Length: 343
Image (cartoon, rainbow, N blue to C red):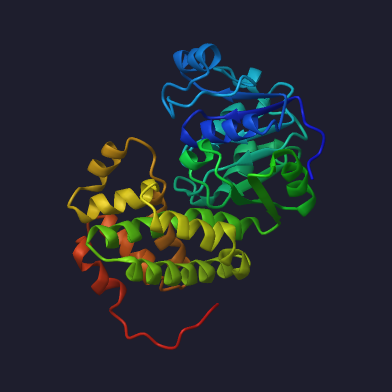
């Protein structure tokens, strides 16, 4: 199934997801060496000397073929693959600042799930812009799908999707990364895969709000189903394929985040329902919650494409403080339901 094991894979970003994906690749021997980039020298020293990341999953012993560096140049030098695990809102600027250091022909794999607020762009457009004149010589791929970092660190089997403009490019990366417990499927529907990964975050906030208000699994199942319908509508308008949104990056990731408090977005929704402000919830969680900046972008896109998207509009209104969480049900369900459609 896999191509010859490469000498080195670089993972940029030593947060929860970066640490987890580096752990998976190292544990499953997807390269002779996995090099993790982190800005913090003491964090790198701990990974290199004690085989532990003191900032994330500090109780887990990291494999000996996983090491760390504070140098992007060192991280990418000789790497067959570079995986970018930075948050969506800072990733394009990071790529722009370091574009001269990436190697021609070596794929960059983005794991960011969000819409870039500053440029109002999907990550594929924002990253292509960040690479500027080098965008034609550096392949871009997008990894999405149901994958909690904590469960990756516990070696749970999972399936994800890898999208690129061509199946050939996605397959090339799939053959390097995929293994028995970390199965990657391929797609050339970059827009659909990106929208699935981005939109599930505010949807999970909505589910967390419902759970925090005391509503049960029946309510959340309805939210998941109708949010997925709204996601498919937007994907079609933006050039994606509706069937992608019933796959791993759509319904798969949506179910994961909406039904589990392991999701930061879900937990934030519960805190909002309990009366905390968005800022207070951010501070308590202590990590980036991508659904918050994405929520307003979805409303902007809905307006641009003439879509109602009532559930996503409701979440955005609650996060903006325009309505109280308890009034969200009235806003989302103010119109009489008609015949169920599936587009």
